[in-house]
Length: 240
Image 1: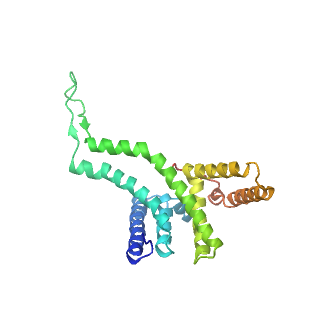
Image 2: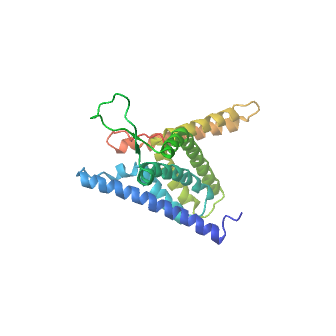
Image 3: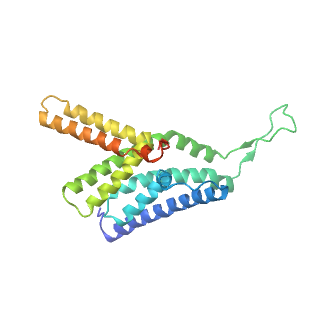
């Protein structure tokens, strides 16, 4: 399959244009809701800690940067759950409204009526509940692999890779601060490399290099702690 043909490029750009529009609508609706409630305007840092804002900006980055086909996978996985949730919460109740359940024997005539959801709604709810966490772990692993892929391009001086590695590092650092799945992905990656480096026959220079990399990563984590820029308030942690 040619990932860089005209049709492939059109589909690739269209994917991220659609993702940007979708997340843009969500961000706009959230902003409008805050305006209607008269809530205090959120700070720029507060907006940047919003997951929807992060993926809106990332979609725009992928829209204009060189192609990385693997970058579409996280958005594809998210879209499955977005469509499923929207279908369950909006489409099914509209097209197939809940049916009124028969009152239990001996129930009071003034009791509040009970309604039964359409079986499809229950099936979608079960699907989301069963696969959401595992899917978010897959997304986190893909995002880590994608960072390594960009790093490889930096090493080989690929076009605009230096700009992209900076942007994507900021994105991944923000996700790490908020997502337990991203944290687990990094922990698992570190454990795997530790096992490989700890094997007999590994040159001492390789072990020292890996320890240096881990030390630099920890220093970067401490230097870029977003809580320092939020007046000590912890950024909201999510499970996604």
